[in-house]
Image (cartoon, rainbow, N blue to C red; front, side, top):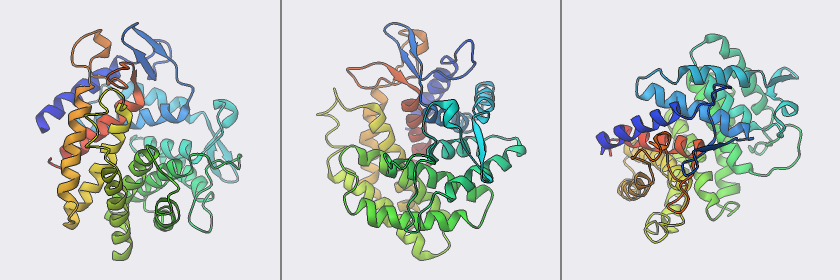
Length: 342
């Protein structure tokens, strides 16, 4: 399995190299193999997340070919950062999007994986912005200027992940308690009360369980570690109980690759916790990972039709268009599967 996934990751690496805009030098968002055309993405969150995805893949494969794209893209989005009351946020007037903690989170994740030490100050200032958005109950306000809390659980999970990654690299004493409080809220007051349901649970569980794994590894007490582990297990046990993986064969023509890749990304983190804690969910999670991988691998282009499509993933068997966010989730799922020695 590992050798196959390494081969598929090499194809993904090649795909990234072929998705660079000739003028901007940055990553395109969507590619249509049938017409050999690109569609621009107006969502800065996805574009910044793509930088982080490329960094992780480059490092895992011990390669540097993507460095020029990464550096140019990071430099571009650094110009979008704006100071407010001593912290940094994403400038909504430049991006045309409401400034959110998700923008800040992915900028932090991208900067954390970038070598120049001068970026430490940017990471700290972005983290300060997220921290001031936390409410007394542990939840986070999503937008810096907009009272709406659309995508509350999803964007909060991304912010929590950025804070826990920052804590691992630069242990600011404020980051860990912020995430510990947030985990309690999003488990007890959000997930267990049914505030997230249906296919949205897959994306919610991905970011929350990635955070749970980080928290499990560095929590301040055994009680918090146990809380994080149980939360991750319950999230994915629910997805499995809902039939997501066993129904993949019946849904083969409609189930989207981004759903499967996101589910596998978070499930691998939950499995990693079972491996370290000896939890009984291990076999169930392992079986589901294998089912998801089988589906996802079949959606990856492995033939040159055309050459630029090689390594990308179709949205579904009925929609062969390729998106950078899909390939980022898939690459992460493959990497984590290898690291879990499945």
